[in-house]
Image 1: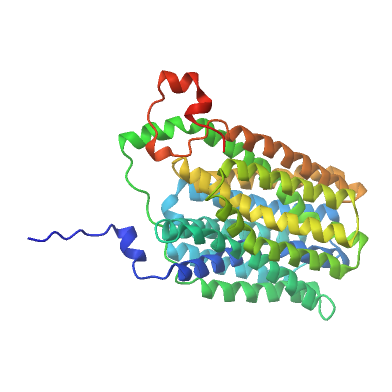
Image 2: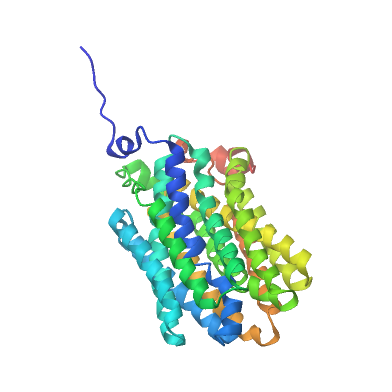
Length: 414
């Protein structure tokens, strides 16, 4: 007599598929949705200031519109999780994002630009949540150490967007830059076309419900830290190139953005590898502190060398922070953790340009210092997350009196 064990649907879907295929497809989706679809605006912004006469306040408004769309998309993913697990929705989002890029050069109306950036933000959030879920569910069992390389797709997209602007800035106009970005997004969309959708969540048991209740305080600290990261990083992500361009030749600004992308490609994989030996909350706090220092350097020490060093610090941390934070959220077993954290991140991205706008009158140093201060606060929230963090959540039970009396023995810091 033989027994045949049938694999669960999520497991069957990934049997026989090379983990590197999942990595490549997920990386392409993230490169299109976040690396190019959202962040190509950063290196194009100086061209729009010079050639399309876009004001600094107008540039901040376009950034805010994109972040509002991103927040709405993240909230949609939170309240309609089946939507972001749908492959047709992901494909439609990527095509809509490419279309929004292609339409940017056809007008110089700031209101229409804002509408297009709103669409791009909404579409990128849906594609991001889908791609992250696909990477986590597709690699969790077979190759969890490769998840960081999938997140590196964001860095690849940023690098490509910077190279794109470097290539066209001296031979074409801001319009050509947007059209080239649209073509690049379509090519990356084609590469991610067959990405397997995320697996549906496992049924919740009574034990899982108890576990979720007990992890809320850690998730609250995580959500606060990640929201503050959204505020601080987006200030640098929006104004870094424009700030560098003020004090150096234009190619240095676009080159700094290429450095951001180059550092981001292995950055997430590096932080993921370190997480196999060190506590994720500790690494999260370390990455946030390094990012805060890099952004402050840009504001306090003008020049090409400091700009490139700051760009490397920024690129080497922000994707790693995302992968670490989402991994912690998933570990804490909070329902729809990726969508909820992305929504907080999106809220932070709206707040960032709004609170930095009054400081733009004197240049970009003020906003960048503000972003650095917010990231310092995010570091403190991540440090709170470390306190008695449940590293082995799957084996947790109700703490005994001894564990409550001696917390450092029950759950030591790492």
